[in-house]
Image 1 (tube, helix red, strand yellow):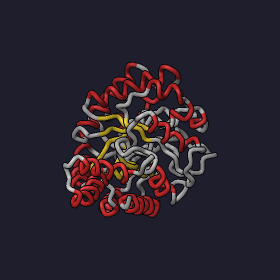
Image 2 (cartoon, helix red, strand yellow):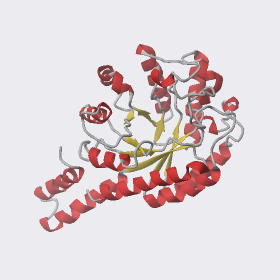
Image 3 (cartoon, rainbow, N blue to C red):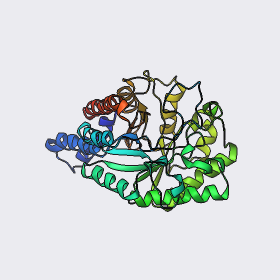
Image 4 (cartoon, rainbow, N blue to C red):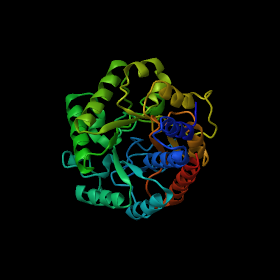
Length: 345
């Protein structure tokens, strides 16, 4: 496949060939086209407001302090505020906010914990982000592997009360974010393997998984936003995924390793999504390697057609707490470095 820069330059060259551009201005047009495409690219970062998205009990075998759900908010507002201008400086132009239990929802105040932000406070933070040129995007993870934030409703999955609550929350989040361009619905790791450390395990499969996924997508679209999701369902259900997944859903396959080649199943998923014509914002992380994000950008910029490659998303998967400041700063820096290399084409 031609590189991203080659594709863009070819388009400019085509205009020159038609006489629309003179030869003397072709090079300028090529460089301008590349620059404009770079400006439209999403350089995203996932940050947690809520963090009740994993353990439902204090499992002694899990050594991560923040793994279990807690009845209080785990988000350091000072760190949050400190990170935003650093993101701006690194060229990050979009932030996905994992809301979870972090908001005092008007429709369902029962989901709040001690310290959850008021609607007004959240909107103030969103306005501050926009002033920095950062587009805020809501995320509510409806995967049964990551829905402890839903409280009792996480044990009423696929019932009428559950559907009503989820629809209410999607609608309210869209209102809070002023009808965002995208809405991340999560939907990752809904397997027994990923819930074996939980006390209560729920897995939708076959037609029910698809029914609920399409319900969430429909609610997002009803609120004039575009559903965005993790793509790992394709790892285990390849043919069914491509048979049933709407192309309207923005895909975020994820892989956090260092090497990138198509012999790695998780990496091949990016290429399969491209072959099937899905829009993508690939996700990387410094969870396992500080080289992952840069390697991902370098590899996929050559593999995914520019018309489908909407950007890249960095994840850190640690709470927004002072103890993880350095981890966040490193992840942000890695985005900045990768962005500079990407801009060179």
